[in-house]
Length: 363
Image (cartoon, rainbow, N blue to C red):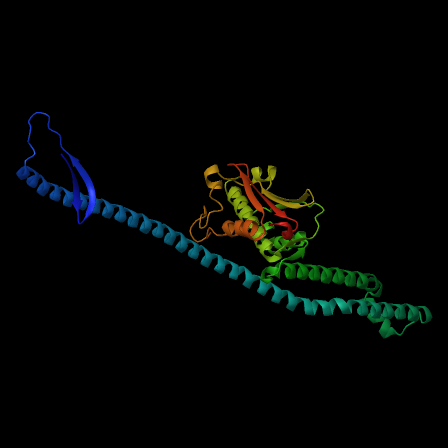
């Protein structure tokens, strides 16, 4: 006997029964009972199918919710990172604006002094020549003048005034150079990409950090070794690259200070603290900037995490874990370049930055 299993007019299965032992076993009464059982089987099969579909939908919905939770966590993390980066960028921008304002205020009086030194020099030379002429024509002077000249060394003043004026001129020139480098560093608030001399940015950053590099009673000096290549002006966000130099150099100084705390004076003298900065052009298409220190170095596990947001090995309150993360974003995302760190415990750390000379060539 072969019969269909039907539920609500839909075929959901077939039942096949075979008996080779007795003739006439499938009587009408037995077939009627079997049909009743078939209808119950149809309902059971349909319920099982619905339950299976329900489990699939629950599983699918659970998977969908889990994916949404992962995306939500990622979005919240990105928002937190973006907020922190905006705060950090705003701090650097405020620093740049403050430096620009200070540089402007210093520049005005210094320019006034430096501009008038030439006139003072001319006037002084004229007065000294007048004194010489007067002494030649009137060698004999009144007693009152002679008494005054005994207490007022005219010959010494004649020799010293030009030296003083020269020192003042050198001093004002140096202040103007400092103002220029401060103004260069204050490019932090510039938003446009333009061709710049990257060495100016490095020099201005070193000037800002000068107080941390100089010798102090409790800290030895940190020597800066420069090996600048013949770099062309290349397209970049000058202010943002200054921030990159600031972050890397600050970390290098921190590493050297940490090492010096663990060393004796004799060790420091025999192996002085230093930061080497090297720049070069590769294939006329790529600029390479290397900043290397001989500090404590780092383990491979730490090195692999240094560009992760909020990762820091510094004590609480001394580091946000955003400096190198922002550095990575500026170099890779903003300038389509690369940055890597080579380091080992006790071997210092070297950061190698590669940036295309022309951003227009980057697709």
